[in-house]
Figure 1 (cartoon, rainbow, N blue to C red):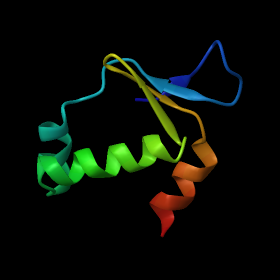
Figure 2 (figure 1 turned 90 degrees about the horizontal axis):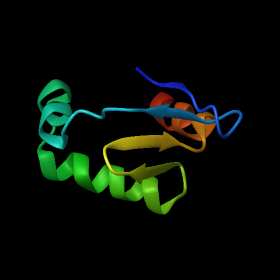
Figure 3 (figure 1 turned 90 degrees about the vertical axis):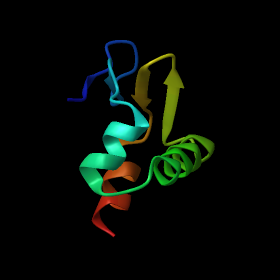
Figure 4 (figure 1 turned 30 degrees about the horizontal axis):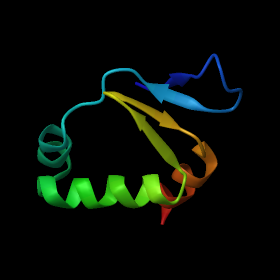
Length: 68
């Protein structure tokens, strides 16, 4: 789903991110929970939103969080 960002080496991007509802349904979370998690990741500089495109600025940090 994520691809290398051609403009920023080491970063990734997802061109068409599923809706928060879709993510929540697949992970058994409420849409509001998904929104709070995404907002926190954005505030921490791990991800950045530009329209429907999600840029992963800190792939290692996101991977670490996924493991804990």
